[in-house]
Amino acid sequence: MSEKKEKTIFIICFHPLVSRNILSSPFFNMLTSVSGLKIVLVVQKIKKEFFERFYKRENVIVEGVDRKLNELDYLFKDFAAAAIRTRSRKIIRKMRLGHERWNSLRIFFWAPLVRSLIPFLFSVIIPKNRYSLLFDKYSPDLVFSTDVFNPMDVIFMHEAKKRGVRTLGMVRSWDNLTAKGGFRVVPDIIAVHNSIIKKEAWQIHKIPEKKIKVVGIPHYDKYRNGSPVSRADFCAKFGIPASSKFIVYAPIGNRFFSRNTFDKEMVLILSKIISKELYLIVRNPPGDPVDLEGIVSAGNIIIDIPGTKFSGRGSERVVDTEISPEDDNWLSATLMLCEVLVSGFTTLVVDAARFGKPAIVVGFDAITPIPKNESVLRHLEFNHFQPILKSGGVKIARSESELKRFVEEAVAHPELGLKERIEMAREQGFAQDGNSSARLLDVVLKQIKS
Image 1 (cartoon, rainbow, N blue to C red):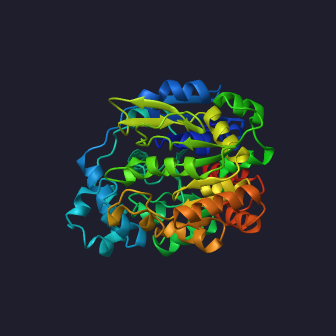
Image 2 (image 1 turned 120 degrees about the horizontal axis):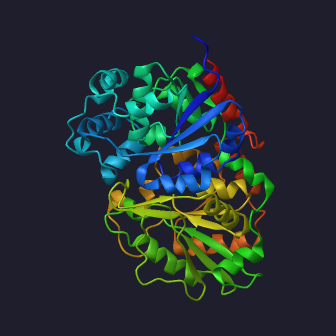
Image 3 (image 1 turned 30 degrees about the horizontal axis):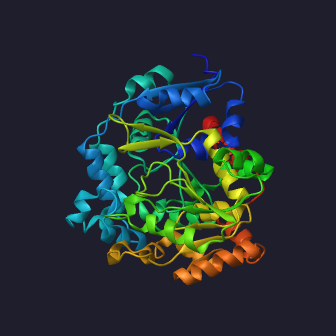
């Protein structure tokens, strides 16, 4: 039998930020340029048209599928979440974040004792062949999981393992290895953004170092080309003068509070303390509602709600969002052109630092008292945020008066702390050489050839 000449790769795209992190990065264009390669984007059925509109190519096929998850899948998700003991996991349990139903009942207190057995138990107990028609149709040579903890990515890696298909998994974000729990399926190779995450992979999760490849952050590569949107066009979008200066507030979002009064109150505080010459752009987080009742785009406040929203049956959340290449361009322009970013514990502080922009993290609870376990002070205790705090690359405002002073200093002297911001961005994004996409591509191609 002659060897199959064309190679096929499945890219699993179920987390809303994959469209930004992977498909809108230079990596995807480089991958589609590889001759003899067929790429199948596996997405939620309700999002198929979106992915076809932005990412379909001659050698790119978009397959929309339904989420075939059952109670066993969620049971193992909860089990794995209980299997590591980190500061982040402790905070998450106390804040009652996520959907760890069994965790809240403390049934899995002994999960860490069998953490290493979870992938084996998963492989034996969890049903296979849920997506056999797709595997039979394309016979993939590689399954690329863009988020190793997403339940759908896990199912596709599980199926691939059963069929002897190689798997490459990516740790999607900086908090995943300390906050998401243990692995249910361990891919053949794991790609990570930086050396911090690599260390977490082998120290916390006992992944052999030879399986871990540090590639950097692919979507940062295009940031080297400057703002994709001119200041004039950017300001025209929001109907403000081209000479306008602005600061950006990135809300924490409703999912971190039982009742989110924090974000609305922070917008009101910022609109009060900033100079009248400055505009305040409130950029909502994609896919997470923000309660800003009564606040609209008026005066010096501009509300920016990014992304394409999907709702109803088949969406992962009540409101699910995808970020298009244009949305990503607007985000990078927002950070490149702003004077300063004010936020909670978000990766945008690293993005802003990548552009050399000052970032201020709010370290107080605004006006309305917040339950102790939901306080923003608890947010600062997460494992993944500790390197940020140690770097000195961000300012932590502990009061309204301190926030006002930090904003004024950042606007008047943006050069202050630049060295620390650059170093923080380098530590979080690995080498700032514009070659993260090339490194990820090299990992992918080596797995296909294995």
